[in-house]
Image (tube, rainbow, N blue to C red; front, side, top):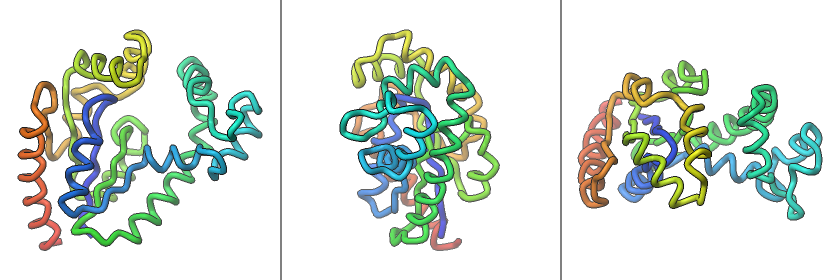
Length: 204
């Protein structure tokens, strides 16, 4: 099945684009949503996380304590890799299962770290097009501070760990500029891309 890899920096508007493509008939496979499910109460990743990081990283409800883990992995490369060793295989398996079950016109894999994960080759071989949602770092900072309540320093630290804007754009086959665009303008761009993707899917 024809597949698109949708990516972009934090606060770029990936969800807006993915939701629109889903409404138009694509099957959306969001690796962030999969990761959240795996680290929710009863999630498949939680036993290993509690074993490897300790109960202090688990909330009373049995979910990952995201704020505590975020603080740890931003300052500790070894901890980040240990967490990824737990979650990435599970995310990969769940995304593969969702891909196999896809019934939409085509598949869209939403992968926030598609470029910077060191796994780009694998993703690039799995998808036919890479779609990047783009905006300036300053726009990202404003959106995430407003949406998540993070400080500027926290958002800047997240952006610093992600691929540069230029690296994402270099990997892109298609780009949606979501810097100061209205929702209607974004929808118009997405609708036009959907039409192109339908044609590509039919020829796939």
